[in-house]
Length: 65
Image (cartoon, rainbow, N blue to C red; front, side, top):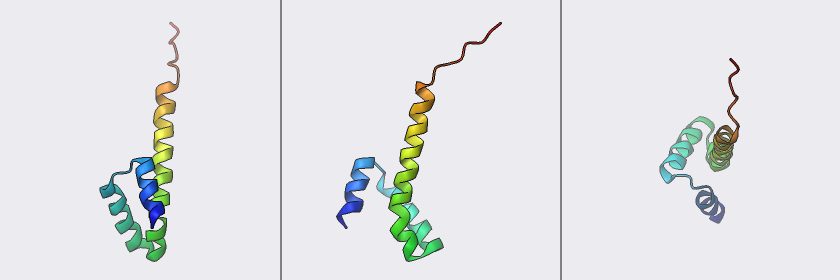
C-alpha cells in the first residue's frame, strides 16, 4: 500500500494518468493489470525521460557543404 504512494511521488506521475492506466490495464488484464499498472507506467516514464534527455544532450551534426 505504501510502495505505490512513494513511487508516485518519486517519479512525479500525475494521479489522473496513473488512474487511467489502472482502469485500462484492469479492464484488459484483470487483477494482474491493476497490480502491474504502476510499475509499467513507472518504466515507461523513466524510459521517456531518458530518451528526452538523450535527445537534448546529443550534439548536433554539422552539415558539410
